[in-house]
Image (cartoon, rainbow, N blue to C red; front, side):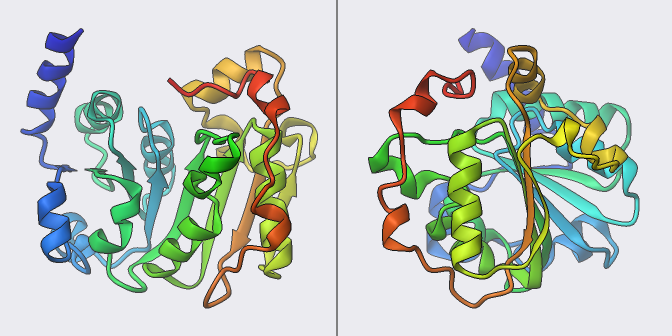
Amino acid sequence: MAKHKLARFAAMATYPHVFQPTLDELLSQPYRLSGRWNSEVFHNDRPLVLELGCGKGEYTVGLAERYADRNFIGIDIKGARMWVGATDALNRQIPNAAFLRTRIEMLDRCFAPGEVSEIWITFPDPQPQKKRIGKRLTSARFLNRYLRCLKPDGIVHLKTDSTLLYTYTSRLVSYNQLEVLADTDDLYHSGITDEVLLSIKTHYETLFSSRGATIKYLKFKLNKEVVELPDELTVFATDADRSTPSAHRP
């Protein structure tokens, strides 16, 4: 297994569309491509869209294939998984897909203010333990990080099987009076007809759907300077969610 991972890491080091800054690089100064992704990587001025916690990059590749008028970057710290999507994009010569291996906490070190138009968060770990609420990718902590690189009224998409994460995010969005563009707790019985949203499925969506989990989808604008966390959400977690099919993200 270790040899398999090392082979993937070695391959990705040669990919022209994969970027792997070190932690020291990001802590010492903003990443060299901050503010320059479109000009130096994609060589155009199209809207920039991120997939956070991209895993195998199904959404990054799928969206890039369907929307030639936008640029997409899949972001994850786990390179062995990212290799799947990065290799797929390379083999199929998809010019508007790239990958960035880094921690999502470093997002504002990698992108300049206003550089990003949209963010996709697809099937992240719901972090059900109370002490890990701040690690949820839709927590106030992370939403405020996204604000540092999103354009005004930048859009966030959440697609999840976790009732806990969906409810938590919905309450946070409502409390902050963020503009909701789409909201359903059962995507495939909602009447939503967006072919792209319905047709692209991550590994986890396929897995949990096969176990009977319903898919939730929330799309909203981050149309506020600071996202505030209400007191009631600081303890919003439940052991019940741990027993659902969505609880474990290996």
